[in-house]
Image 1 (cartoon, rainbow, N blue to C red):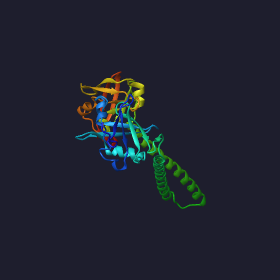
Image 2: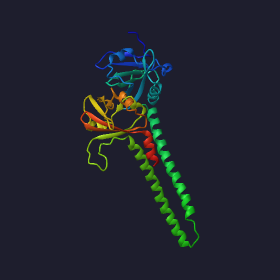
Image 3: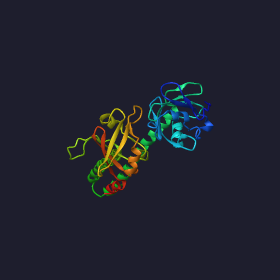
Image 4: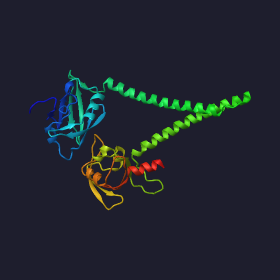
Length: 318
């Protein structure tokens, strides 16, 4: 086998196939650097292969990266690869080993030029993460202060009236109370709006309100990646889904149609509907923004109902 550390050389030792790369600064974002070795692609089955791979580092952080193909080879897309490099401050001739753990999930080990393995995030990555959190907190404070100032101004205008000193003192106290109450009300409304938006894409394990149904179900909003495979949230999978790879039958909620879709179980990343899902998404005419509800009616059967994006927009306007 010809050695090419930039392209990535296959690792033949151990039970799991893999490959390694040396991150030369001048080649970091080229297609050759992002390429996946032919020998590795041939070593995995079509059942395991998907168009997205997950890179997981020793301290638990992971990065999903889309895979594309040109006339010669498969390669990791530039946006995901560059984010993985920048988040971990890589590109100084480090050696990376990629060990396949199944279903395109990889355990990645990083070795510096002095052969020392990196076992925790670099300080620069930690500082960058901390600064992002700090900026978000500061933005939240600024929003609250802006709201507070507007309320104070409006209250001052509405409560300005002539009268005795007693009236003015009572008015000042009344102003202060109303300022505090209005400020709290604004913050509570903002929190409720945030939670409402967040819950659109959250698993629902309970039955619908007003019914006695105990059928397990979960709801999510379709993203672009969900049109290729559908990851099932870990909480729902742990409580209700099979513990091994199983062929599911998914029924249309309104039409007498059904699809066979394989549910692939993974211990490393989220278990997912993969083989057969692309066909279902295409024939169901799923689009980004559609809200899908999956009801588990039998151990390996589900009913899928879809609320189209346009209908949701109308409901929000009402």
